Image 1 (tube, rainbow, N blue to C red):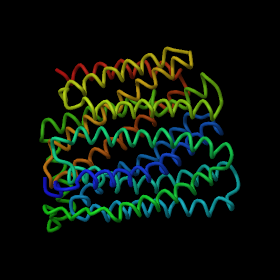
Image 2: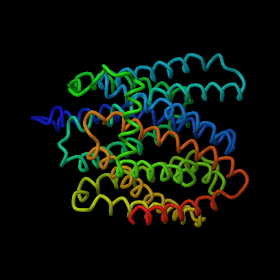
Image 3: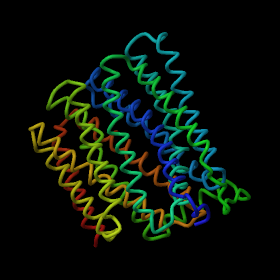
Image 4: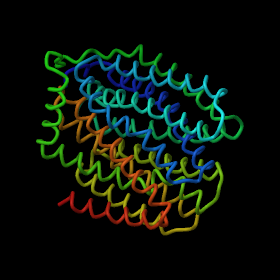
Length: 396
């Protein structure tokens, strides 16, 4: 690799991961609070789908361009700039809330905020993923990706609880204010982490040429192209049992912030456990086998989450579901970090972000309205079966 594989790389990596986890905490709080607000105030699969699409579609449109910028320009400045932009958008919403009247107009204002925040994430995410290989030696990537997954899952575990408490004792505006504070703290910590400008960066070619080169590189490499395809299908089929979980809980188990919070907490606890397991045992398991098993377990859990009507059983299945989710995502990230050339890291991870932020809203646009026409449990069971089939085909 081309940068700081040297003394104190562990300390720099940890400080970088913590800074990003702090900003992730605020962003997750806002995302959870908005989805819950819309779920409990509309009980509409269409509205929930609309917010999910507006939270991810702009990221899909800009992520690959953000990946090009991450290969051309200073990644640290891109990350800080994106964080700052997201914080400004949130601050503007806080100032506007007292002047907004009418529920529908308020929902549309939240949609616009989600669009702008998603654009910032599309710039930030590829740069963050491309920075990690600058710090971490290749043989340590899976282990540190597991640690990163555990840290982020721990943050996502705490954020829904904090969002639930704030929504119960305060308002949505209070959640947005906490997001501003976490952005300030995260940017402050990142500013002291030294991330040098990547040596192979080439800004002599046009952005359009870099975009074409990135697409050719990703899809003419057999392994990278296959992994991106599997990841896209995985994200698409995650939607019924993952992103529509709040809607299932609302319809099957009860109309309560407490139920929604508990489901999110258990899911993220499982994700944190998955990250810990990978950091300890991941280096002893073949990458391909690990990915296949993760997909199978994920599909089985999705199927039975659609079958059960017992809330305790549903929570147990959600915990295992979270473990499998981390295994799949971490293995795919490590695959790409190991197989991608230094000068293409930003573009490949920009493409990965585009795959996520494209397939996820596509799934919401299809499964959200569909859940208003047929039982969501049927959709979850069908998606679980399809994930198991994909795991079998990938292994072959």
